[in-house]
Image (cartoon, rainbow, N blue to C red; front, side, top):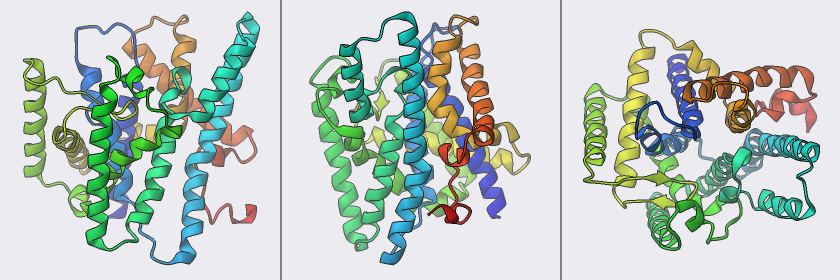
Length: 349
């Protein structure tokens, strides 16, 4: 049973990673399509929800340090590695064409330190990992409280996130500029809403592990209704966790949860018939794909016909190749791409 679950989880995460790559495509679309908007309706909440699904609470104080150490090694070590790698590449290219200045270097180092929504370009995805790590730490603390207090804290977090999002979006006309008016290292304020999605995965694990067909149908109806309402202009819904854009107190729960349930349910039904090895392979190399696909897109933009297909294929294939090579060519390479196993690497501590 565990093997079957791992199969669909890997497939879903692989599919979501494809959506991450597509979601960062900025070139012309073959047709006028709200595809990118719909992707952002759910793909980031889905990652937090699926992570919460496999969260294990810790009641024993002696187990806290090893658990936190494991998550740090799996999340923050690759974060630091790829941050350094991409920064060195960028500086090397700028030195080569003579555009690296002391003023740019000073400003860039400040932004790299603050991280979160202040990271753009090839570093644009790095906010997710710091938020995921902080979300894990917060939820670890929450689950050590009494049950009634857990839900009280989560409700307070969600309300605070909505209030902050409403305030932020009033500061400028564009979400990226608006959210930048609120200084916050590593996007830690996004944890306020991320922890709620994380908790939904944890508390409703039985549902997510085997979504009933009736629930899939309801989720499909909600998703179709939301898209139809958006298409005719009845709603103008957007969701961007990175830039604090939370558009609606209820829809920020209903739409992401329904669309995640639809995707998870479909993949559970599909993998019960046949495994999806390509999506599983993408998930296996998801760390490298996440960190490198935007940079790869910049590099190949002038080498290939630039469209959503070539961008997506290059953003998947090149990082997968590098993900295979890194453990084989760099000492402790497996740890650098997030494959830290405490038992396997016990001799390192």
